[in-house]
Length: 324
Length: 167
Ligand code: SF4
Ligand code: SF4
Ligand code: FES
Image (cartoon, rainbow over all chains, first blue to last red; front, side):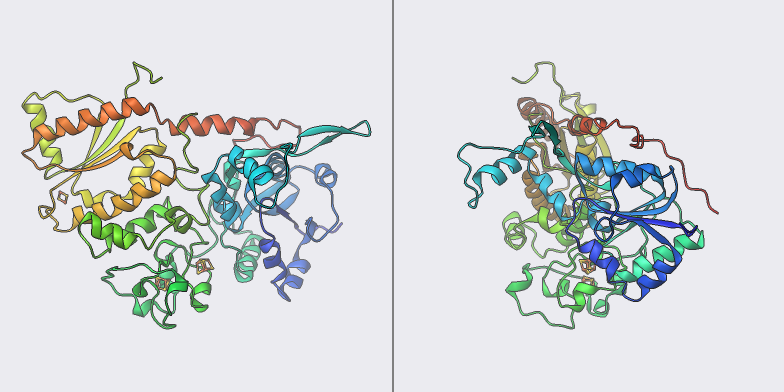
């Protein structure tokens, strides 16, 4: 094998969109492929765990791991790849902050299993059979990975060097990240590889964002006809732009949809949801409880709205069960 | 069965101009209130970032109490209304996330209402005693035990990697 830097991609609890975003590099993928050797990429190339185990520790230059961590197998693979890699990048919202899969942290593992294997309307399972972790088949031991109690971010399981945010990250950011790493100029550990300012700063509708917002109603995008030119917050739609990191170049806003926060917070914010809640609520026009609650009725699911991509990375991380 | 010896931990954010002064007054007047509260003085209830509240719970508080000036009396005119608006949504969100309503409380207490400080704190302590400990850090560390299961030789140890060196 050549002595070009070795690159690995791996996926955990994710939808496949992050893999797609690598392919979306289009002709630039040739640039990447010319500069590095991709030595592990299960979605596209035939390599096995053994092949990775056989590599020397630290011999992979950079590994991009996407997806949240939900199973024992994902933990094991993430730790194996960590050992073999010089740089590990949490790729995409799920690895970065838990992503949409981490909304499952609103439920216990038992609640999820009960629904999936018993109560779901599409399931017929009178014997209440559940998957077993181990069983014997033709005198062979067969093992399944365990579903863990929590959905975790990648950095709650292994040490992470950098983060590429987004659901999924844009090809432009991926290309920049690869070029940065190849240049040998490593940014400080823990850097999120996207501009450290609010999305509003790069939003084409920024000029129409009022400095004194005052909310009388909140609307969900399907409830109103949205003006294609005006700031969405000024139209009463929850746009996470003020609490979200820039870097996507306001993709959703270009499609006349509000930002739902996939790039996570800037470095000055610890908890993206709390920050957004704070700034939205401060600008409600009412002063008494009943009036305030009336306006807030327009946000029926605050957890799903403010932590859509990051419940696992939030300060509370999960629904608290008071009986542990 | 709640533990008899259990003493709830409350983090209180008190506005400098009203509730903090009232708590002082309660002290000077020797009004006895339960010693379970860690008071943090802030310049206005409007300065309480919801992140502070979540951080308090995440660090092991059993309850969070916020004290501000009565409506119309805020020194910065709108601060207490801002807090009230955040409080209404945050309370609903905390409820969804399994944190009982009694654990999060907002009270308007003016500088002269030392007695009210005592009543509110004692009442909150009683209610939290009935609920028992919240112990979020302990809950997370119990769940994180499962991370120790994988011990195979290729697995990276869970902690202790060094900073990347710049080339
Ligand atoms: S709130 Fe949304 S629409 Fe308004 S400026 Fe910010 S990103 Fe753009
Ligand atoms: S606008 Fe918001 S949700 Fe849409 S891609 Fe950008 S950061 Fe993600
Ligand atoms: S100054 Fe007391 S609540 Fe604002």
